[in-house]
Image 1: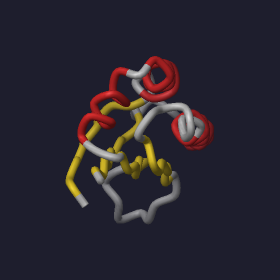
Image 2: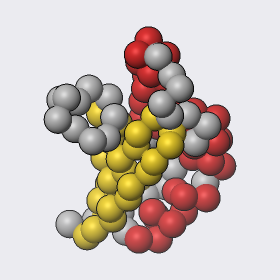
Image 3: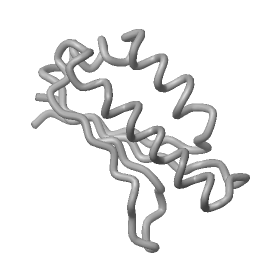
Image 4: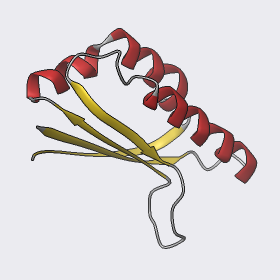
Length: 100
């Protein structure tokens, strides 16, 4: 199994209310991929964090193997969500992939 963790910060130009809406749309979009992408076992987006955090959102996902993770990255459903709900609104992205 492969864990795929992403941390994002949203762009500074958004108000608190706009950020809350953006976070919810990212969560809905990414969690909606469950059952649509081969090898994707689990997917969860954390939108609430403590003030001590340096990121505003976290994707925690699990894949059968590295091939499934690679397939996810180019899968049309994932690309659609990433291009419409995530990339336009985020300023930083950190990724950690590891075997469990």
